[in-house]
Amino acid sequence: MFRTGRRVEGLYLQLVYAPTAASIGRTGYVISRKISRRAVDRNRIRRKLREAVRALRPALSAYDLILRVKRARNRAEQDAAAAEAHRLLLGLAESRA
Image (cartoon, rainbow, N blue to C red; front, side, top):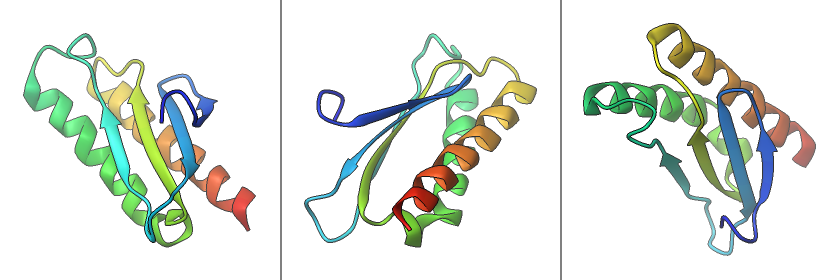
């Protein structure tokens, strides 16, 4: 995916996507320990990103996705990253239509 997928850059996230070979797309999340040392914080970010994907899932079922977090150190940045994920995924879903 990282070699062949198309990328969309944001301030907090990088979205990598490619058409899926399976019947329904998959989603992966990359949240490095550099983002936050505590697993609790990384899991909180992952939950927020999952919610953003779940809200748009029917429109995104034709893609395999990777959401890579570039920065989200505190809760305000985590919320901003989740909002950015929703915006980037919405743009991808609308471009397909």
